[in-house]
Length: 390
Image (cartoon, rainbow, N blue to C red):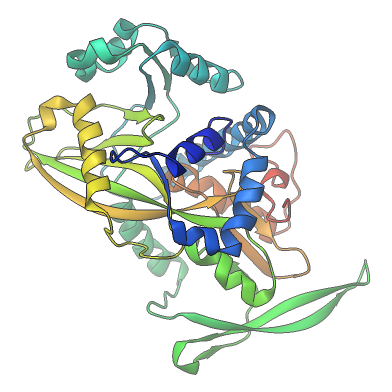
């Protein structure tokens, strides 16, 4: 999300006179938001080549670690869910885009540079019908996908039955109960969250540790504690195309960075195939989160999908919207907040929630348990993901 081409794309979208939807849109109401200006200032500072390489390295480290953590979970538990992907393939339609992908991939392992359309089609034969639109691509074997809803339902059962985890749904945090403590060995004053107040004035006391993972709403919630967390909601759209079970679907995730397009197929069932496409970036703040406010943008996303997969043009489609909690440097914030001894966050994963979720949870558990990082171990260094880096 944060790269050297982003500022140019933003300004083009702001001053475009074309009626055609753009991959990036900034709503006028956003210009009156102090939260947006504060976030975009930090964000643009990270849109340099140097910052991009550094942040991409941190993301790769976390995603590789997360893949290992997911494999460990699946080896230790019986979780049945639809999982279907051999990696991801970034598509380039011209030499300029290909060179960009190559530059971004210089510091990444487990990738394959595909410098011709024929090489791309060898990896993903379903693109044969659009060979004339392809210049090259970059393949990564690390990425995967799955039905997240199915996985979470299975995981919830395990957490309840095996670990006695209690879930409280439809409870909104209205405020925090905070006291002050003294850190013995540093004589530093730290704040301590002892409880929370929810809707209907319900009070939850005797909190040992509190972890805020509420995605798009973490910034306004943390303001109650006078803590700044630079995570901003970036709205996108989702197209789901349902096909008969025998229709060919991509065997890997397809990525079109120019149009902010991410195509993934779920594992076909005996009844149907399902392809899910997410994309576009819309800065509208916390307005209309989860609401399909502009169907024409979802239609544009669908048309871009059919541009790559024309054989899916006659099947049933459905439109949705989503908002991704994007951090100011595109790297999630994981760890303890300064000036608190028991307040932690795990947020800012943007559109990479599934890719980073398991490693993020394991990393946070290490931080909470004060497990010292050892370079030679399988764990990763928590420092680059600290919420106190801004």
